[in-house]
Structure formats: structure tokens, C-alpha cells
Amino acid sequence: KNKTYILAIESSCDDTAAAVLDNDKTLSNVVARQAVHEEYGGVVPELASRAHQQNIVPVVHQALKKAGITKEDLSAVAFTSGPGLMGSLLVGTSFAKSLAMGLDIPLIDVNHMQAHILAHFIDEEGYDKPKFPFLALTISGGHTQVVQVDSYFDMTILGQTLDDAVGEAFDKSAKILGLPYPGGPLIDKYAQSGNPKAFKFTKPKVDGLDFSFSGLKTAILYFYQKEVAADPDFVEKHRDDICASIQYTIINILMDKIKKAVKQTGIRQVAIGGGVSANSGIRKALKDAEAKYGWKTFVPKFEYTTDNAAMIGIVGYLKYKDENLQDSGYVETHARAQ
Ligand code: KG4
Ligand code: ZN
Image (cartoon, rainbow, N blue to C red; front, side, top):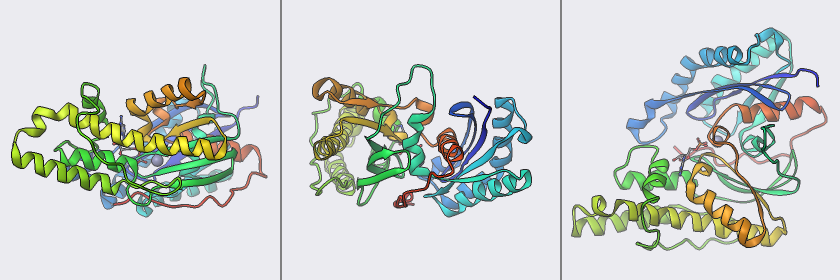
């Protein structure tokens, strides 16, 4: 294979990321996470843009250095054009445009949601890629979608959240319990030693393949207020059981919809992506479904689940390789709620 070096840049939310791919292989995948948002309990857009401004040059430098190439070796520059926070996107976008223009090489725009899905096509030793058609569930702090993927760029959104993203459901529940942001990984951690059936939270009734998580958040808030009024130490005493019960409810909501999507489409390959696919509960539920229903499931390597630039790079590579590849008009919806 000829060398095709793609530099990819991702700055849609609170991570400044750059990666270099040689064809479909990752040579480097650098992410500067922004700790500044922790004390605010969520991403502050203005602070995110400022941190991107500080990080973008060092992160790109590091990505090139780790890949062992210089900018003159690059074949193309790929960047996230959306969806995301405008101030954050502008930093990566402007940088990518100027660099591509200065080097006089192609500039390739990438949809962040498509990238979460196409991350499954990064070539990794021992990783089995999904075959078309497959179903993709993108679950993160900014998105929750069920997508039917017929080919690289022929994707149809079958359902999505009508309000909060699933990661927000984790984070907001954690916040009610007094856990720091982002609380998703902590709920996961405590859930491992808790009883998932200790407390019952009702699942929302939403038609079709759409999701809703705001009702669950309210239910958890009322539950918390009621229990803490009766016993101020309630959370301390039952933390693991509460976390396990919340996680169990959220995973049931996700699995119900995937089962429905499989039934509706007849497609039994299910791929997940986005930060919440790191959750041990959803991983286990998918593995169980493989055994129980004969599905084939795909869970990306951890570094490709949360926001990263390698996933932007693989899309850049696929588009670079085939000029005829056109976007299918994939709708940009649900940029991260603020
Ligand atoms: O993909 P990501 O890094 O950024 C967005 O595009 O939002 O996803 C971050 C989200 C956060 O809501 C975080 O709490 C959640 O993913 N998350 C988890 C876990 N790890 C990350 N949620 C549940 N369990 C986890 N292990
Ligand atoms: Zn994302």
C-alpha cells in the first residue's frame, strides 16, 4: 500500500484531539482533556473554546511527532465540521483550513456522528469489523442515536433522544447523588458492587426508536429528596445499590430500543460508540444478547469510544480514497446540551 498520511483534528466539545493515520491504521491519537469543567459540573462553552485555543498547536505537534512524520509528509487534513459547540468547532476548523491551504493539500470535512460509527473501521490487530448493513448505537454525553448503516456514508437515523443524551442521564443522576462531573464512570464503578434491583425507577414510554431520559432524571431527584428527608445518610448507606439500580434502568432503556431496532430491520449486527460504550453494564448486556439472540456485537477499543481524532481520521481516509463518496445528508442534530 502507498503511504497516505491523514492528519485529523477534533474539537467539537471539550477535548482537543489530533491524530495521524497511515491509510486505515492509527499512528498517533492524542487527546488533551479539559479539566477546567469539572468544578462547574458540566462543559462551559466559553472555557472550552479558550482551552482549545491553548491546546491546538501543541496537540497537533505531538500527533505528528508520535507518528514520526512532519507536516510536509501529509496527504490531507480532516477536521470535524459538526455537530458540536460553535466556539469549539471554530478552533479546529480554522486551524485545519489554514494548514491544508498552506500545505496545498486536500481538506476533508467530517461529521462527528458518522465518525463515532466509522471508528469501527480503523484497522486494529485482531479487531473484527462490522459488515454492512449493521445497526449503530451512538451513546455519549452529547448524543443518543440508533442508526442503520448500509454503507460507509449511507446512514439512516432510526431513532434518537428527544431530550437529554444518555451520558447526561448518567452525569445528572451522579450530580444529584453528589458525585463529581463527569459522574458516568463513577456510577459504573459503584454499580459493580451494588444490587441492580434494589430500587425501581420507571422507564419512560416513548414511541418507536426514540429515547427520553429527562423523566428518569426527575424520578431520581424525587427519590433522592424523599429518601434523604427520611434519612440524611441514605446515599452513603446505599450508594452502590442506588448506582446499580440507575445503571440497570438506563441499560434496560437502551437494550429495549436495540431489540426493537433489530426486530424492525432484521439486522442482527450491533455496534456501539461514544463515551457511554465504556460502561461495563452495556458491554455485558450486549455480550449476553450475542449468546441469547445470536447477534454479533462490536465494541470499539476504549481510546476510540470517547471523543478522539482517530475516528475523524478514518472518515477522512475513506473520503480521501474515493472522491465519489458523498455525504448522504446525514442530519446534524442534538449538539451537546449546555
Ligand atoms: O463521547 P464522550 O467522551 O463525549 C461526548 O461526546 O459527550 O462521552 C462522555 C460521556 C459522559 O457523559 C460520561 O459520563 C460518559 O460518557 N461515560 C460513561 C462511562 N464512561 C464515560 N457513562 C457510563 N459509564 C461509563 N463507564
Ligand atoms: Zn462524541
